[in-house]
Image 1 (tube, rainbow, N blue to C red):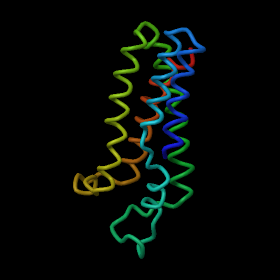
Image 2: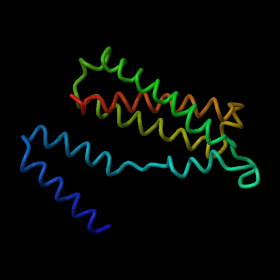
Image 3: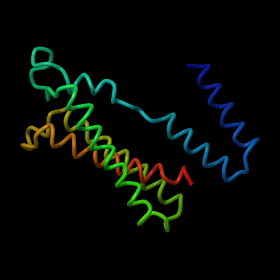
Image 4: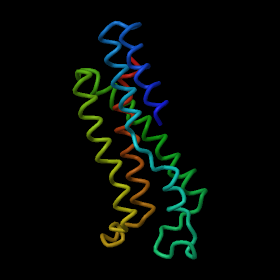
Length: 151
């Protein structure tokens, strides 16, 4: 852990040495944003694909549905995110896109907690519908937030 912190600090310092200040700040922002991102996708795979014997109240998705269907929907909606950026986001300032996008992405990623707590069942929303819809929203917002880094 200490080595990772030192390498990260060195990386940030080298950004400011080798790049113009505006580019160094953007690189530092994206580096820190990715460093502080907490991913739950690996663990959630097991939650969603557990058998009834492993987790009786669980969604019990097949691995094929979880990977193929949700992944395909996420890819298509990622393309929609690119189209939305080209249509609406080009006139925004980078700072606005990054702040709004980061906050929206954080909120949308928290939607998974609704499934983990099984609140969607209380609201009579099927697991498959909820996960496909939340994955679509995550992809659109994630793509909108990522596009400024490619320009």
